[in-house]
Image (cartoon, rainbow, N blue to C red; front, side, top):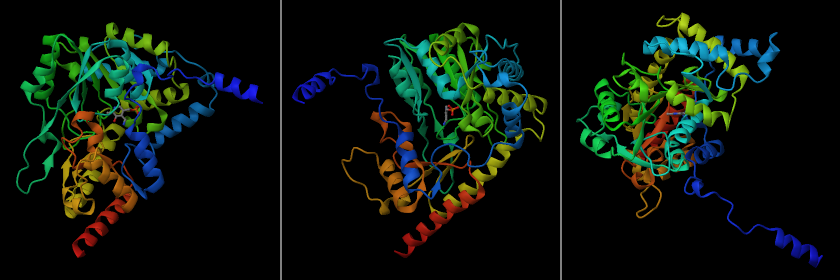
Length: 437
Ligand code: PMP
């Protein structure tokens, strides 16, 4: 037995097992807050997914693909994208971008937009390269740049001073042109643009996109353009694709997601669109890592896009109907949040909005010198004590900037009426308790 014990002690590994490139990337806001929401929440407006079903036509084509005659849909398909899907994506985006796209070289299908982002950073970023990230940002950009060996360089959207009595808009978050220009150097390899932006819902204007585009051209920088919320724009606003601006097609990878586009986040079908000189390197990463995405889901998304291509711009198009429905939900939630004093910032796009929690601070007192930003403690307190899940805005800032705007939380309003009503009930009750206390 002693011999066995000493052998097993010897067998225990003592060398470090974690690769250096993982340092500092082990925490993940979604893992943490999804668990909290699952444990405590009765109403979940946290993570960004609809709790309503995808459109019937999409579910039907999936079922047909799954149980139909073509059993090859259960097998591998082309590594870089199922042919019917890349074909219709090339047609669809060709029309939007007014350019001929080759399905085989200008489009690549990925496991959600997440993998598209991962491929971009792995394919383009070398040790010591810098990548500009606009804050607040979808959190995975930072660890993905770091894992590729690069250095993220942050530039903030700054919130203009509030106008008395008026609700603010996501358009009030703006880049300072001089500050943005100061971040570009000969080490800059790429900038990540996310319009419409998660978490603010900001839809970048043509002027703002031209500013970014001019700097990319001047400094010969790539643009990784995360456009997963491209159809979710409100009040007649236009989503402008930066790749359509002068000098940008050649240096831009557009990233999209069927999860967001068709309200089916669990399918994990995403894509990249861009010039072959960029996509050829994404294919290298893809073929040596994921290699292939689920065929049936790709087939269903292909048929969904085929339908949308035929109905483009028409009232029956899902890309017309979904934003219409979401705009109503946005307006409803904006009004309810405003009524309880959790001042919302009206989003121009996406299915998120951020709201100011300052008036609720007395319930969750500040802990001076705490390492955790106030909004994070507030969101945790809220889910545990009120059963309402939301995401702190500080989660969308890098470590050094987490306290720059730490009195906002992000709500997702892509929810059934009953869910939104239940959230409102919690907030109203909370407000009544506050007033009577
Ligand atoms: N980019 C942004 C801005 C997102 O909000 C998300 C999902 N929340 C993704 C990418 C990832 O999308 P997918 O689910 O298609 O991987």
